[in-house]
Structures are given as structure tokens and as C-alpha cells.
Length: 104
Image 1: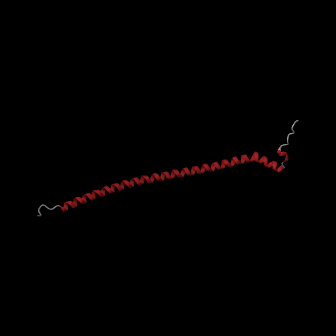
Image 2 (image 1 turned 120 degrees about the vertical axis):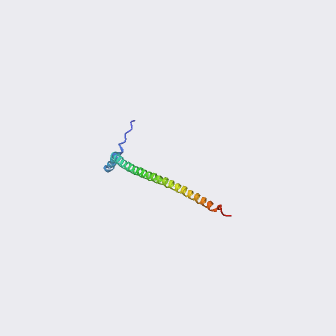
Image 3 (image 1 turned 180 degrees about the vertical axis):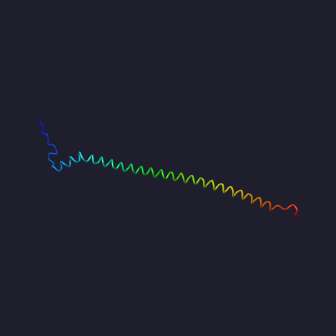
């Protein structure tokens, strides 16, 4: 006995449903591919913008670091100058506390 083959499922579908199936099989993948490309392109643009922002932030941090180092050097130099002045004042105090040689 031979089995009788069933007619294809599309045989029972209305013409509108057949058109939708054709659309889904042929047109939809191309549409999704182009949509996917557009999304990837937007993603790459955003990633590029993030990288540029990170680069600007890095440059700003390097500039701040350079200025900070300069300020710290100036502060240390000023502190050393103040230490010299303090030492000088201590010496003057010691000199003024010494009894003069002619006084009993």
C-alpha cells in the first residue's frame, strides 16, 4: 500500500496568508538585517563618543595632575623658606637672651 501524500500546508491557506508567509520568509530577514546594521552603527557611534569623552577626561586629569605637582613644589619651597625664617628668629632670640659682656 502506498501512502497518499498530503497536499502542502500552503494549499489550505488563503492568498493573504500565503503572501504573509512569503513576506516572512523572504522580505523580513532582509529588513531585520538592515535594522541590525543600523543598530550596530548607532552602537559604534555611541562607543566612539564614549572613547572621545574618556580621552578628554584623561587629558583634563593629566593637566590637573601637572598643576597639582607644581603647586605642591611651590608649597614645599614656601615651607622651607618659613623654616629658615623661624630658625633665624630663634637665633635672634638666643642672641638677645645672652648677657652682654660689660653687664654684671
